[in-house]
Length: 120
Image (tube, rainbow, N blue to C red):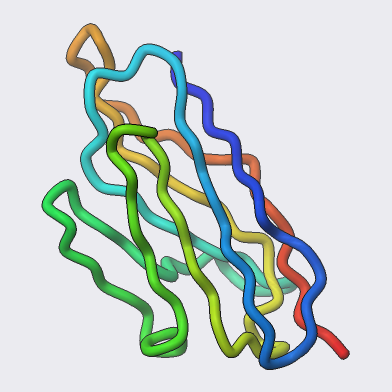
């Protein structure tokens, strides 16, 4: 089994910064792609940022230039640095990892979500 632990959410004022972390543990051989999604109230979940095993990144247009996704393979952790936050970024943020297990199965694993609230 693979477990994900997310951290770093909270309340921040407009223009502020937060850094989310998502650490994976368990029966991990390697991790392929990693991503951060978010779901705002009344809206569908959307992909915010994605990073491949080679380090290639892509972002939804609304966060380009403000958010940065990164990964630490030694720690099985993915990060999302969020700058210049605005109220439209308010959502529950979920990490999603494509994990190769010790038995060489490929599983998609979701975190439980961390709430980010941007408000004055």
